[in-house]
Image (cartoon, rainbow, N blue to C red; front, side):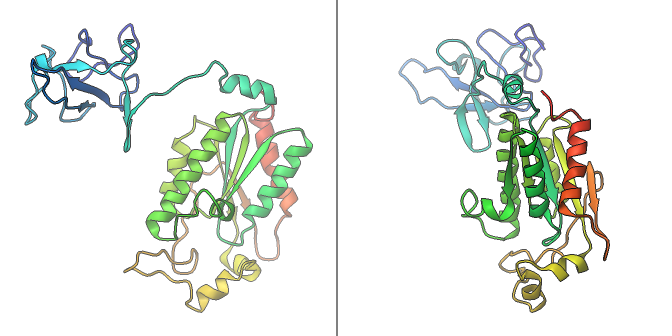
Length: 299
């Protein structure tokens, strides 16, 4: 890292004058060629760590089939400050803007710490019921929370998504991103979704600072969930009316013909046995006790 807090591209001890790199080693640095004499077309070259585009010790772009020349390159700047724009996914020419009112100040205002409580489990395991009980307890204690329910978000934010495998993954990703925003606002966000695959839940965990993603596993046997069957979905699945279709890439019904991958290292497991299950209030109390012990109910 240099004095400016930026990390040089591969092969450069210190950034050359006019060349800028990102504060994030994985983010792209956009470079464009200067116009040559008659105003040739400007091309954009995205230089990233471990990418085919890099600068050598002389400040030249390594060719490797690209053929750019040192004299043709300059850094993209914003208002002459030298701040580079970023490329994230399919979004280009974007820049992160910070605000003086940060997460710490928002948390002080709310007298709590923002986090994400991710409740996962089979359909009928009681995720939404426990989420509502938890939100009620927090409200009574003067704490602000918001529930992102799996069915509710499909009424609006994710109404364009089906239950194909790729759409289910995108559903979880979007909820994770929204939950991250709530936590950054200082709110205790309660996300309750089946979210059957570990990799999708782990991706959401990786979006947040260490400790701010609290995974709650509704450890309820399939037979208990199926006996409850609040939406009648297990009955439909058993009748073959909700079934995986390899050709159309639809996922099956979780627990019947599509797997559920239980957490291996969740923060809280709320276990329920046949004939022996705590009440939603008792389960919610367990989560509140965890939040209190970890300091989330104070700034």
